[in-house]
Image 1: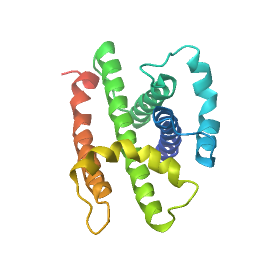
Image 2 (image 1 turned 90 degrees about the horizontal axis):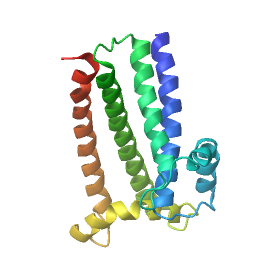
Image 3 (image 1 turned 45 degrees about the vertical axis):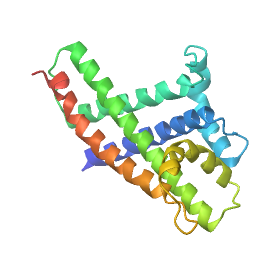
Length: 193
């Protein structure tokens, strides 16, 4: 029971910092202003790691790799810590174990990206109905727009209601199922075959 409590605390901490790093990555990618409460919160919670890493890790094609790579590192570290706490013996060769941990960390990072997009789209849709002039509205609209745009081209509006968020949320659920299936693919690297 104490193991599960410890893992819950560690998962919450790693998940929170990963989501904040991903939010920073997406906000910079979409050129969303950080001069709002959400942006200030994201910057305040991630500056301690992003600023020093920017000296070492350059951007790539306009993408802030100093935000994305530590998010991957946090997920990889959590996967390793979880296996260590649970007493899972990593019996593969060292390179295989390292590649397996990186792969699992990447799958977990992709899962967190899907969850973040899910939340952003859901909040954007809800705000458009209940508080269309909310100060947070433009932030969530700007973050959700690139993901909704392809669906808006295909999904027609019905009685002036945009159904593209529903279709996108369904696609995101399917992606989560596919990512769940990928986890087992790294077992041979971690445990040898």
